Image (cartoon, rainbow, N blue to C red):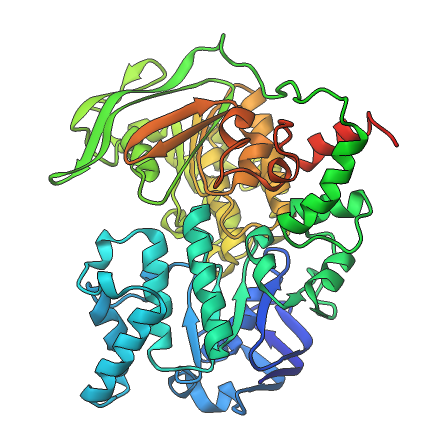
Length: 547
């Protein structure tokens, strides 16, 4: 079905190829997960399948690629679109109409599909993705999970034999992500559709896939095989696999159900131990409030998004804001930074109301990272991106190209070797880190981060956790909106759960996450009732109870 033979690809003006001598075979009907560190070439490889690379990107390619008995380079994306349906990381980026049914019909109209057949195909796509009830809805009114399913339905309307998806769950809450993945399982099982999916949050996808492909960071030979075999050979693993390796569980558990068989044995061995672990989060209750939302109300027209919401984030505290898509998390961040007007209540930054202040004035004290890092990237190089921010804030360090604060931050973001690279040529995860550097280089009193782990592998997330911990310990107030519960377990001092524009829970990570059916991290599911959220906590406790 898909065969790479000695495929090498180099982007225009790049010093090194992003893909080097790739040899891979993906069988017809496979459900394949493509993983690897940020910048390893996963999205590039995926775009090779339908000819976007090199037709859209430019660049030099050598070697052989066959997809459904076609050469994508010779066939061009126009022809390949009938064989390979493609879903981008951000579904909004590929939408061209305003209504669900119109979006699904758009590709069919461009392909000159007869009207009678078009109606049949639209109904098929709506039914396959369970979207019939939403056919007349405006895309702007859908949740992120619903928009992702619309993007998949639009790609399937041309009846391709292969579906390629680039991080389809990166912006989805756990329940919405599960809904999308279950839809993919149905397509793979019932229709025999070949699925190739790129994802960094392996814990979400591993239970469903039959093939795992790993692209190493050094461009050495890709690893491909059964998930257990590949995971056993790499370090880039989710918590369940990391813990299983550390405790020598064989065969490695790929699902929580498998893992419970092993964790139950461990629990029996230390059954007389205490049932909970004291919280290790930092207590900042004696610190002053740096961010305050007091009975805030925000809406779009007549629709009220936030209702009488109050929240405080203290200096030296990391607060994680979680909840289903559409619960109002991003709206709250935008209202704090002044991007959305308040319909009621008050927001205070450093004990001062933001009323009457411009967004630029607020941003001198609060750094804001939106979901789309491209919104912050304007310079020709990464180093310039940070220096321009310093200059715009009137900081003298911007006058020196080798400003120590810039170089130090690039080092901590693992971007030193790309300091002169054009930011928009980077992977999504690398762009995310550049954007984070751009808002943090001024060392503001607070950071607002909206899905900061999008596009980040496990190592990059660990580095981000260390960086945020250092900034917190230096007195910074940090508010993170995320669906990444594993990050929340690692870094948060408090967790705030939102639903329908209101706060419904506020407490320590173990209190809010520990017993949640949707938001519990993998370790909490393996050891229910113990209060353990991370691999580190579990291993530290288990070491106290040897056999």
